[in-house]
Image (cartoon, rainbow, N blue to C red; front, side, top):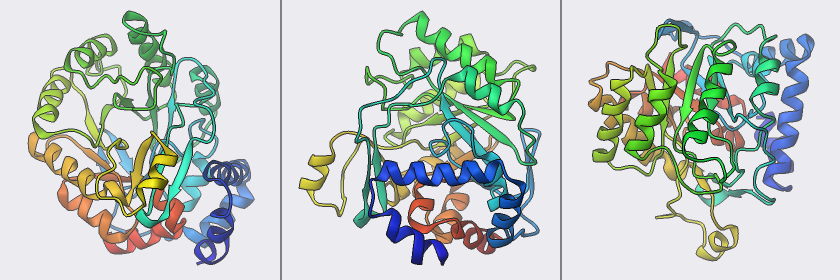
Length: 341
């Protein structure tokens, strides 16, 4: 109630990215203060029994995780643990630091309970972020989301080595690694969801090797079942531990927001309630394709307890939220936990 009645009206009066920076600043301060962590936990974290599970050798106290994108630089995991998340995924991180795309690059579309962003993989770079995470003493699983550096001059073998650098550096700090093959916000506009490109990438990363941390592959929401089946077959050939569904969308179908507003915003990845049903469908496909033998993390439009239940019923073992937090605040976690319990 504090968030929706007091903070949200203030935050929504300012630019979406500035509001995000404020939230990130507050969470980072909490991350570095045991006192603030205790306070946050007393307000928001209501532990629920019966939600714990083990997946790919990791214990998740509850199935609700923070999605990649909120904390690109790994400055808030302890704060998120205090709020009651069952796991946290930071990133995307890239081998080289990047300032991302020019501002403005993040936009709210409240009529659709959604966001559009073209951040462009802004982050401090793999070296800085993994060094920061190396001193982290976290009680919940930590995922690290890796992507290719947003630089169109890095392609071919150089792009594979770029991925490999982040992947190997993340091994020492991550409990699991998400290989982001679908980010639409890079300069050249291409992704590793091309089958031959994905095969080349996984061949160099070798995620199935025993010494590797559990590695998941994240897909776009803008995928049809046939292409998804082809990509999953490739992933299974290389021993991928699970899947994340889904990333943002470049499609603008059936939105309530006026076309003039969308035209003014321009390109970017759509997240939130607008992709909820499509994301859930991809989760269902993945569960069917893998015969529920591999964990699926469902993400996309989870802004209510019912949306979370729908993802899990579709086949998600775990779920992640981000845009839902923007609209609903940290109280969303307890609503979901209560419903699942």
